[in-house]
Length: 94
Image 1: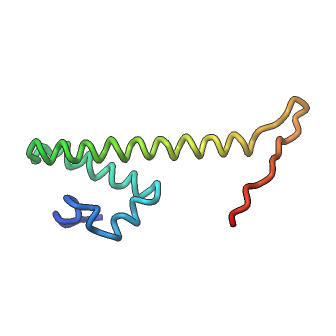
Image 2: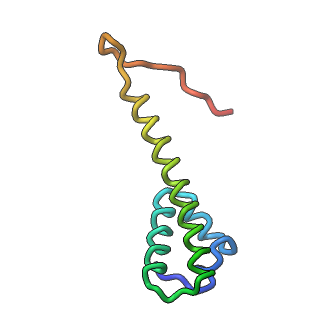
Image 3: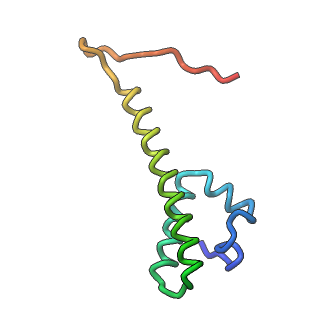
């Protein structure tokens, strides 16, 4: 995916970028882009810091999503001492 400078510098101003970042995969893609730009070594200090801060924020958000998914999987696979599945009532959305 190729981005214009405006899209890379200000993802908040681009609605489609915000939608892509809402997904885990979109977040990973953006992190990859940030790493590539930082490793390129052509950025000034301020832009490097801004991208690094964005990367840290996205990394933390991704880790939180992974932790949540792991907890959900553990709940789904849980069994009691007899080997029976542990069940609970589902949360019903209004």
